[in-house]
Image (cartoon, rainbow, N blue to C red; front, side, top):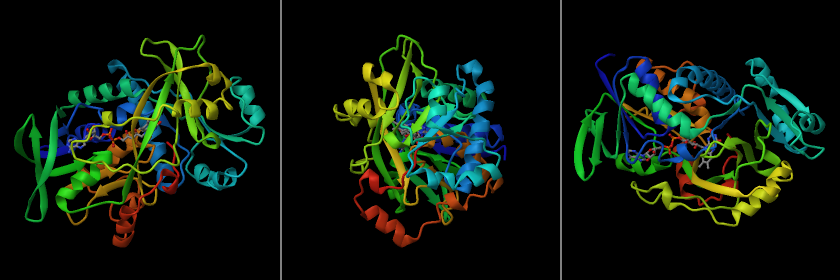
Length: 408
Ligand SMILES: Cc1cc2nc3c(=O)[nH]c(=O)nc-3n(C[C@H](O)[C@H](O)[C@H](O)COP(=O)(O)OP(=O)(O)OC[C@H]3O[C@@H](n4cnc5c(N)ncnc54)[C@H](O)[C@@H]3O)c2cc1C
């Protein structure tokens, strides 16, 4: 395949990871086209939390591989300033939501995914800063943790470049080149100049912009986007010993972090269940146009300080606002668009696209270069949707609570 050409549209973590894995396979000439700057989408705004405790067999296998890859990348990208923070991930449940999760433990056992079930007293003993309600249950993932997007994105881009990937910023894909029933490349606009770029394969990893881009082909996938935000506290007097926490009973998450000046602080976010879906208004749309209502900061404090009392006395210093996207069944959309040879999609990663990115890039690279992924992926196939389900989902106006519930 050394003479093949691939164009990856979108310079977020999914696009960069795909380009990196194609280059590792010596696919040929690999180019990433990004309409703004690398990480300009949700990737730079993410909390970067990852856990292997997912909901489906496919998800569990994929995340297991993602976590192994995060560990490998920690070594490979260290020289570029990235390490995976393997502090573990504590997934918290209330008494009513625990049975549903407990039913998944046999899948974790079957696939060698480590976990530890903890009651509230054991949680408070291990992490004294935490005060879970007595009936809450923790499912601790010892190999989970988090990545700092501001370290990961440039490091992965630098490594991809070392492997020969060309990354073009300020280059918007405006359409597709089609010939003889195949996608043969893309139409682009760079600083007002239009250009055709030919390619053997085109991989579309444009997250919430996917529907706008697929409109150019008269296609769609059942995808809904919602505004989502996360916050950093002001520096803490002392660092807190904490894992990354998916605090499901509180509807949010919190993890250790560092301020831009390197002082210890906390990063936290929560879902706004009543918020209406967000329809990307134009292909040029930029996430900087989004804003979070100021009142959300107080709600976040009120919700999460019941678990982590330190938050009641810490102010929020900054916020990042982006989009998360959900498919109709809540699972990612990853693979070939069967009736349009040459075109591949990777989108719909709910609030877990950062966690999925290493394996998503690897699977897309396997499909593109070897024709088949190493994990059976029918549950993620772009072809799995009935035409009527697609139409119905797109026609509805949802609030976030109506979308399938998924966190990281
Ligand atoms: C506040 C927040 C917190 C989050 N926390 C977590 C977390 O803790 N863990 C986790 O796993 N996930 C988290 N997520 C989700 C995660 O950020 C996303 O799932 C992930 O970043 C998606 O990556 P991506 O590369 O698909 O998208 P993006 O990073 O959005 O990249 C898509 C890129 O495509 C570009 N683009 C669009 N159209 C075109 C075009 N026509 N031509 C060229 N380029 C184009 C955009 O400019 C953009 O840079 C969070 C999201 C938000 C908003």
